[in-house]
Length: 144
Image (tube, rainbow, N blue to C red; front, side, top):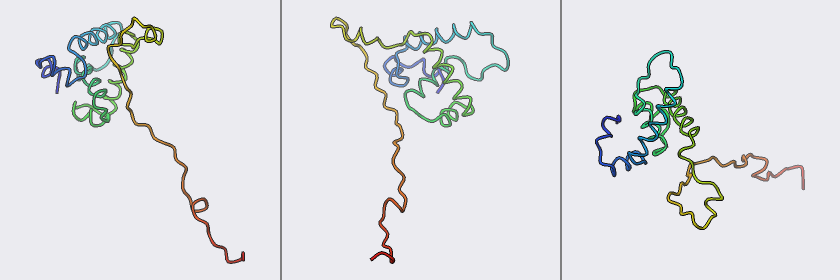
């Protein structure tokens, strides 16, 4: 679903689909565009517009789909989807516009928190490998 299809949605539906309000999306887009203007781009022009690239990144954050699936739905290669998402993430992080307040601001009594972000990504658990020596006791004929 391209940005041209998404921009006609009501603000409630836009937020439901992308995870951010249209105003926040426009702020993010402005930051990404200014970063693009500062760098001189050479080579082949991008297949996706800046709006679509930002929308792809928000889709990745919202749904946690694999790069392969996102690439297939946007018509780009898996490595291209990875590269685009990393570029947009790095640009938004470097701008420091969308950061959470520090510990001191949260600890002060007059500061009221508006948004809570919870990281619910899965992480593998290291478990000991089972092998025959450690899991079963073997009877030996020579010992009585």
